[in-house]
Image (cartoon, rainbow, N blue to C red):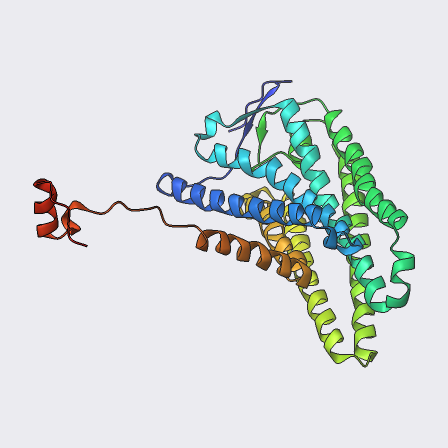
Length: 343
């Protein structure tokens, strides 16, 4: 139920409508997903940072996506978990916290697309122009790509959230599991025409740019592989590109469905589910598809596990004192009478 307290700074988050007998089951499922999500992403990031052999353009650019996934997961999932254990009337958040969460959420969503775009460009250069790869993917180029991947979404999302913050509020109910831009401008009773136009333009431009550049890049990669004579390398490249596209499509479809369903309140449950899948599924698959399938990272992980096994196997068992009951009866009788046992 909406509360029409004008200009209130305490908002209520609607969250998921979970049956009471299933709350703890759903909570533990999300908790396990969050723990696995963080272990995989943080582990891959730390591994890339500490291993000098992984300081290559492909892995450095992949760190942008990993950092984006970590920010998105930490921004959304912990509060979502705490709200699950609270009754709907106690799922409260301050307006300023909601603005920060909305900005971070939109930045994470946009950054995921731009990060995949620069990674697709790196794969294109590596496969289609292998002889010029070192000359093109210099440190200066990587800095430009990273700054663009973060800078462009930061500016565009800043304008998007600014247009929502300028509106006066007459509602306090966030009809979503977490705060995003659509949740913010829905708090207002004023006309949100400018917000809708800019938001639609922002979404369409990002969609066309990301989908168009990614599809075009991977199409050229596929064509280059099919016309090349190195069948083994081509098979590996095509497998890598296909898995990249699958993750990209999952992220894009779930994200854009959530955006579209904001316009259809009767499908709020599907929108909430897509909004969560947009965070958990791609963020959980990215370390596997972009990281663990790499031979270099596989070797590093195998060395780590091998060293752990060796450390456990080299541990000496604690010395055990001989049991009193394991000695022969005649030896015990002799010790009791002060007689040394025979050698």
